[in-house]
Image (cartoon, rainbow, N blue to C red):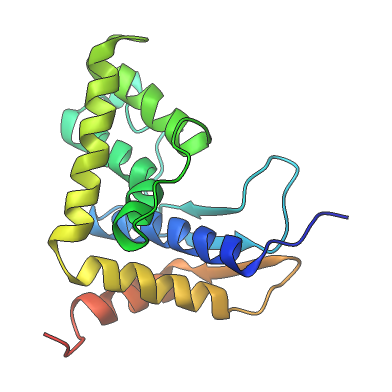
Length: 182
């Protein structure tokens, strides 16, 4: 049997996945779902978030290599890392994990230079840009926190705490458009 995640691990995962969902929303990609797992999966993942608008697996696929959508896709990959830095003042392990690898691969595709310093600089710049985006509009951190809280409050079904896209969108828009805390 898999080890159950601690409360701290669940919180970290919820913030991470909520950040992906909020950036999908922000960049108008839509949200299909966001979910966290109560125990470790065979593939090592602790959660998943999916956009409604899906491409071929990479935001910088050869046929779709338009600069802005590619950059936004890289920023979505980096959203979880950026959220931890902004909201928790923590620097998570960034040199491993599928999000970091996807961001690196897409930055290499965007720059047309695999394994080049230019792609590394591009990815690192987009990480900083993602942090600035989250930090720059005071509603985005609140939306990430609200969605993470809602994820953690979900009753697990088959070891998964899941929020469908329409509910995630309502939570995000409730904070970003309708909250009265200004």
